[in-house]
Image (cartoon, rainbow, N blue to C red):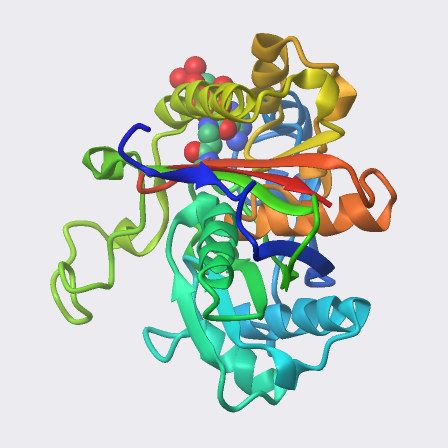
Length: 339
Ligand code: UT7
């Protein structure tokens, strides 16, 4: 084992099975032509370089928690589970409702549960894969039976709409999944590998306002309230790490491209996804892609894509599915799931 949270759930007596998913995005659409009016860009450049055609952006009254609650209610309904039966809520986000309380507490309030454990998890774009691994470990340890995991972002609140190199990428949304402890099953989370390299934190960051740059302190630049991305570096490292994670999963679980129904990658850039397809010699249709509709929604991206893949029948009961992500931290993570 490399130094990481890594391991299989193949022998656990309490496997985490996904029993329901949901998602929610704002109604407001910001398409490439809208962006042409804001920064020096073109629909053609954005489409060719990223695969993105439009993204969803919150309006007044919408927030990370409101989107999350909508997605969570849908997931609970589809699972046929009452919110009172949740033992655990984990919300993966880098755009929380406020500094504290945790967004997960607002979600809990919105769902009407008053006792379960609820906390946020910060792993940027890898957040949903981290949440899946953490929740499944808590369930495997017998400390919870039913968990709600959410990836939710309102990235429009930390996007610099004067920076054409980044504002074209990001959107808002939320996705949710209900995990249930199940015994005597070959379904559920089978393998998990979560990594980080903090020495590369400057590649993707949003520097104000935390304890290093508290509110009221003099910022070195007004731009520090926005996401700062080093696009080229991120692009290259993302391809390498995602390919590594998938190969590692194949080796550890003794599977190959043929065994997998779909890979659901973090929707970061269509060209990153295409590079991964090429390097793994993967049939292109095994990659689930919806980046054209939502852009990059960080922790929400895989959660929304998983829900869409299930609702559209791209994946279904019994299918082997890989969720794989890379993002700020740097962080990267993979989950192998039999639905
Ligand atoms: O999920 C984690 C966060 N996501 C990321 O960090 C995204 C990863 N990176 C990427 O998706 C890509 O690197 C970008 C889409 C951000 C940029 O694409 P690229 O192919 O790496 O372009 P580049 O940064 O190398 O820039 C190429 C040219 C530059 O012009 P010059 O210097 O060659 O004249 C940029 O100024 O494209 C220019 N450019 C644009 N032109 C039109 C950059 N952004 C735009 C734009 N419209 N929106």
